[in-house]
Length: 223
Image (cartoon, rainbow, N blue to C red):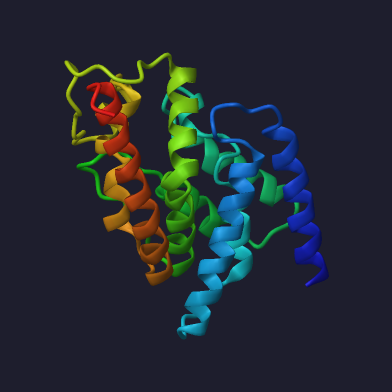
């Protein structure tokens, strides 16, 4: 347990340093919230009778954005390799390294038409936690932060949402931040793996729908 705690503390320090000053919504505080949500979901799953390796969950949550593909020209192998290298330096069991790397490689949303099933309960938990961060008030704030970083318009009524059928199409898409709600965010509620994830997602999804109703009412001069 002491060795595991030391690894977690070292990993926290690495991620804090690596994501310092990050302004697109993929900062340390995002990572820490994903970690909190993942451990909360893991506890609920354990109460329900599932066998969950909490160390795997916590490490995958902490390392999931250490090298995000969105900032590496769409190369989604960079993050898993960076996580594996970090854990390897610290003498982590190879099976645990492979599991964490697999979770990080599989967890991201890759397009409306792309299935991203998780093989293990640990992966399902971390995926739910990360997707919950894309919903609700924080999800809305993060979407506009990232949209500004990418130089996207807030909204253009002449640009319709695109339901991307491949990861390549999703990676190279332009669009607007408002369209991102239809293209991804509003789809996440129904893609949750766990009961806790589904419960939290339902509330956050409803909040986003209320926000969009107000947004369009104001856009059209009705509010």
